[in-house]
Length: 426
Image 1: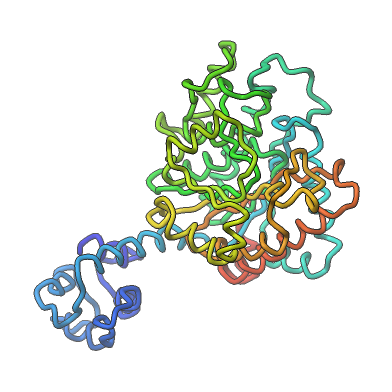
Image 2: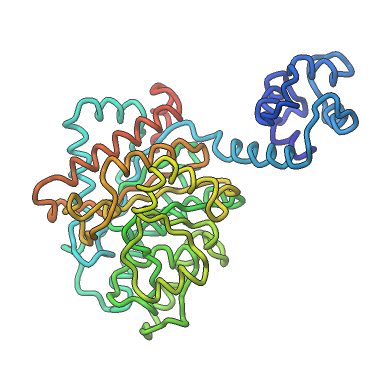
């Protein structure tokens, strides 16, 4: 009960106001808790000053007629308050760019960021929506590295790991500082390797919070330098975030420099323990995995919501299943939603380096993302792997803009008014 008092006492005054007490009543949400909050305040307010001290609050335990609720109700209330306190400071959205394509097998994904932003500027509704909601990170802070200007990799089991590690360090700092400025980042990334730095940045900003990840992708991206058949680091971000080497399935013997940089990346968030736990990871749309990844998914019981399940359940129900039923995401404090465009079907997703048949249609992706981004625990949304050099028909750009528009609509409803969001630019 003292923990509940402190969570509701958001200004740290040591007193509960009528509004703060009303929050408790509304969140309990049971028929027994339908008592008028003003009446409850008057009952608890022994000294008649219109506020509730902690000792007055504790009398709720002595008289069940005042607020009849079970221990389970109180636990549920505490979880709700923790989730609210974790995200209450996020009053706007900032655009974070991570312009790197070194982790992919085919160069060009980094150029998708500028293409995407340019396309936004040419669509008036998106331009207006973006200008009203997004504070863009400036001052030349965009982490970047391109295959076109980088020499041949000398680390075959984690290609360009030294350069990518530098980009990830900068990106993690940027995501962390964005969150510390009370803003929620939208990360536009090149290839998916740098998603590990997004997760690291969130963990740095919220070291005491339990972080869940919803990974929407055609690929599991949980290889390590020990198991990778290609050496491409865009297949490794979750092995970094989960601190997973998968040595039992090793086929490679990485050189010492790779091993050290790999270990450094796994601690990018600042702790020796993993940035996220396997139990707090959920996949959506994954359908192209290798044997070593299959072993990881099976041994750690990582849920995968397939395209077929999305269609059978409906995208909205599948999203709600992600948030509340599968794994332990119902118990996490914060959620990172990362969206690789190859989660969509290869017939419409030409502009990415690794298209795979059997993916989501664009409208399904939108229906899925809307309820996910509506959850108050979602503190970051990431979009990656748009490669304009492979998008010959320009279909992926148009589809991605539609998805971006839908996401902004949701975030616009969640976050602050346009006038207050502009103060969050770094």
